[in-house]
Length: 160
Image 1 (cartoon, helix red, strand yellow):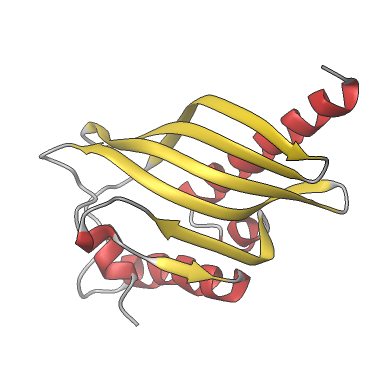
Image 2 (cartoon, rainbow, N blue to C red):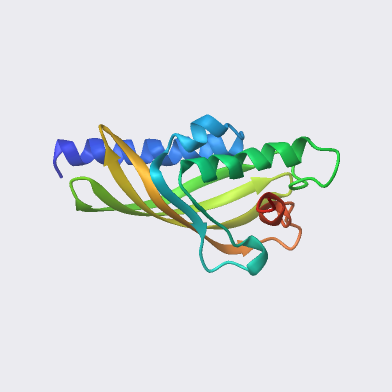
């Protein structure tokens, strides 16, 4: 493994961490900053109520904004959790070429109940200038607790 590859892997891990930290804290600008301008963020192989697809930074930012708007409203809330913490674990990074990487990362989301749901991300990252950004993320869910506090989350944020 070359020094350049080690640095690229660490840059990719930093991008994945930034996505997780910004998403859990509903930091819209920081969240959107990890994506390429033409990025796609979508679910894959999940129940119908959890399906979404957002194309481009503007659409991804609008979706993230709805998490905060719904959570701050006095009407229906996005979810019942007082906190959400995604934990990343196994991360496999394969380079297609010097500017493209395919990444698969396992995640578990914790809420007030403990483990709430888990799955894995299937990503394509692209090097833009000196930063590795998410060009395409597929979110796959393997399991959700019967007591999940996140059952309504996606359906509440995909409403226009």
